[in-house]
Length: 140
Image (cartoon, rainbow, N blue to C red):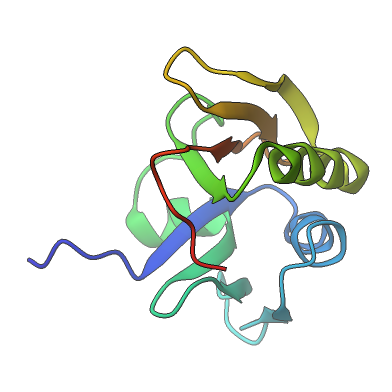
């Protein structure tokens, strides 16, 4: 197996609400909800950087497709990292997320390792870290 990820799927409880948050609130380009003609097929795809997509798929559909029981969501199972080019950009993204309806979990702050970061949760409790790391260059 190659060490490559092509799709990150977030399980959501309300696909319409998730679409509104990511498309309208955060400004992510998408064709909206597709696959509604199939049972458990409704999904939203968002192109991220080349070769990587974010999928929003109902948690009940993930449970059905995988055969696993539907359990409660947990924000601490994983985080999504969004690296930006400056402290000001961290603050701007955090403000945009809050305006879109995110819950600000931890305000942006100077980190112990010399960066600057904050955390927010989307409406389905997925945890995003917005971070400026002076050791990592970002491609815009």
